[in-house]
Length: 139
Image 1 (cartoon, rainbow, N blue to C red):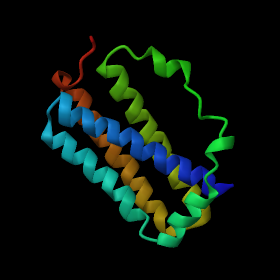
Image 2 (image 1 turned 135 degrees about the vertical axis):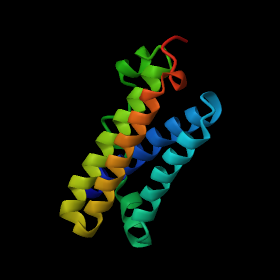
Image 3 (image 1 turned 60 degrees about the vertical axis):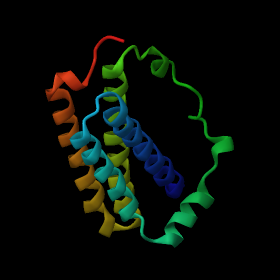
C-alpha cells in the first residue's frame, strides 16, 4: 500500500535528519549545521499540513507485520561519527527520493517539495563533509 511506503519513508527521513541534527548540536557543536538540518526536518512537517493525510498514514501503519523492523548487521558495524553521519545522510536522501516518487502518484503538488528537500540534504551533506573537523573518523 502506497500510504505505508510514504509513512515509513517520512519516519525514516525524519529520524535520519534528527540523528544528524543532534550530532551537530551536541557533539560537533555546529549551530549553523544544526539549524540547516532542523530547517530541512521542519520542511517535512510543513509538507504534511493535511491532517487527514496524517491520520491516513498512521492508520495504514503496520509495525507488527513490518519485515524490515529488525536490526541490520550493517548498522552494528558503525565505528565512528563518520559512519554514523554518512549512513544517516544516505537514509535521509534515499527516503526523500522515495517520497518524491510516491507523491507523483498520491499528490503531484507535493513532488517539488520533496525534491527540494532532497537537494537541501545533498547541500548540507556537502557542507558537513567538506569541514572535516566536524566528522571524526576515530571513536
